[in-house]
Length: 119
Image: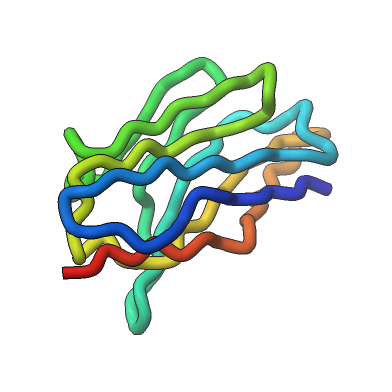
């Protein structure tokens, strides 16, 4: 089992910054891709950013140039630095981890952390 705990959400004004952190614990040796998704009320959950163990990254077009995902493998932690936040970024942000064990892929989700960007 893999447990993911997010932190760093909160209320921020437009143009402000937040840094989210996700710490993975449990059976983490086979985790490769980690990332962040977000879900606003009434909308589908969408990919924000993802990063592999090797450091390859992928971003949603809406956050490119504003958000940066990074990973500290020694600390089993993935970060999302969010700059120049917009009201449209308001959502619950979820940490995601993909693990392959015995050739079987599994996906794990954190509980989510609320990010609110007020006007």
